[in-house]
Each structure stands twice: as structure tokens, then as C-alpha cells.
Length: 387
Image (tube, rainbow, N blue to C red; front, side):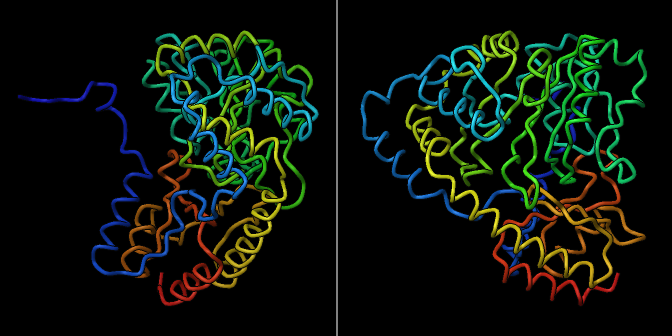
């Protein structure tokens, strides 16, 4: 029997993190001591009070059934409370918040709720791959918005032709940004909102890294006047509370957009396990000192890695948020070739910028998701590579 993938799937490039994981496992199989600065999966444990809440909830038989619906009212109220305290944003937990199986779940399905074949979708490049792959799965047209150092790695909305804006159904924005660590300000969001109102497209803001910052707290898109008229924000417990494997997130904002995407989600899954939602409540409504402690750890790691790379002559800006360091790769190498050398000669895993889109070529992304001593060991290995 000849099993072939659909044309949509066959036309997609390999998922970059899966390819990196293969290379990492191959190096480990060869007996190498691999230092992985690749996939952004926190090494810090989920805080104990969150685990305790989940343990108690798992033991409750009432939570063993299909969860269905938009999420428990307790979880949605916890999201609304978090947004009120952190961002000064008022959300109706009944109509403006929906639980998801992690923020990626909502982002990936967003296209199917709003994009018709041939519609333009404005996609930051480099960017989280799901923005573009979801567009292709929905038979939309990804229109790449280059993120360049000259523009502070933010989309240049003034450069998008009116003919494209008039065909756009979605604009994806990600601040703090993965992979560049760029942070958008209110002026950027104000411009995006004006354009969305003028041309009638939806803004989908990915805020998964909003709590990983080092100086000034990033703002929520929804805190900007008019945002709720045109868009939604996707968020998650994954990075904030070291809960990547738990798969608990949400989208919130415009009630009509939330409801429409929610109707689509009803056809794809049966909701988030209620015990996991109970853990989410403990995370969002409980003590937040654990988040500050994580930020402190990432700051120390950032300073070690950035300082070491600069001493070695690498070109980079000091990230103000996220746990990523976006670095120019050595001259004369593609980003993929540079990553190959790092793995083969130093057993260091990084992600090539090209894995996030063609405008990511020329850069590497390092993740601050290993202890400080491992970062120091990686820097010692880098000294020995002659580029």
C-alpha cells in the first residue's frame, strides 16, 4: 500500500525543532556530552503549590469526565484576575476567555476559524513556525513581514502595501518575540489597531513570554485602547510557570472572535482535563514569587551567555525579555552550517535562524534553559572552534 501525505503536509518544510532534536539525539548516541541551548523548554521545575493542586484534583473522580466547553469557570476567572492585576485589563470570564491545550493549540486553529482560501495572513518572519504553517493548512497566503535589526525586529507595518492589507484576514504579532526577543510598545500596537480597523483584519497576539523579562514588564496588546475591538491575545502557563508539558493556555479578548474560534475548537477536541485547569488556577491566582525567582535565574544565565559571546566577538543585542538570545552567526556560514559545526565540534545545540523563516538566515537562537555552569561550559567549548 502506497501511503502518501496530503499535498498540504508534503509541501511543508520539516519542523525545525524536530530536526534539531534528531541531531541532538544522534550526538548523544555517539556518547557526546551535549549541551542543549536549542528548544525553549524550561529546565526549572513546576512550582510545588501548582503540582499539589493538580495532585489533589486528579484524585477527584468528578474531574475524570470530558471537560467540554470553554474551560471551567474557575480557570477563566483566574485568567481574568491575572489580566486585571498584571495588565489592568478587564475581561468577562464568561464570554472573553477560552481555555486551550497550550497557546500553540489556539494559534494553530485560529486560521481555520477565520481564513478562507486565498486570504492573506500577515506573518512575522522570522517567527514561530505555526503562524505560517497554519496559514498554509487553511489554504491562505502567508505574507511575510521581515523582522530586521534596523527596525528593532518589529514588523514594519508602514511597508505593507494597501493592496495586501485589504486582502488580509489575520495579523500575527508576538511580543516578547520568539526568536528575536524583541518587545513591542504601545505605539506599535496602536498603529496595528488603526490598520486593523481601517482594513478589517483580526490581530492575533502571542504573549506567551510576557512574564519572562528583565527590566520593564512588557505590556499586553489588550491594554491598548481599541485592541478588544479587533483582536485576541493568546497566552499560556507554559513559560511563566514552567508548565510546558502540562498543555494549559488560553485566548482572550474580543467576545465575537473568542466565540467563533471556540466553536471551531468544539469540533477538534473535548477541552482541557479539569485537573490541569485546577493547576492553572493555582498558578494564575496563587503566589507569584516563583515567577520572579525564574526571572532572576534567567537574568543570571543571560548575563553569563551574552557576556561570554561578546568576549568571543559574536554580534548580538542584549535581550530585554524572553529566555532567548538572538545572535549573528559567524561570517561565511549559513545558520544551518553553523549549527552543524556547533553540534559536531562542540556538542552544543542551537537553532538556526533559517528554521524560523528566510529572514532569520544569518542568525542563531540560543535558549537559556540550562543551568549557569552548563552555559559556562558551552562558552569554554566555543573558544576552541576556529570559524
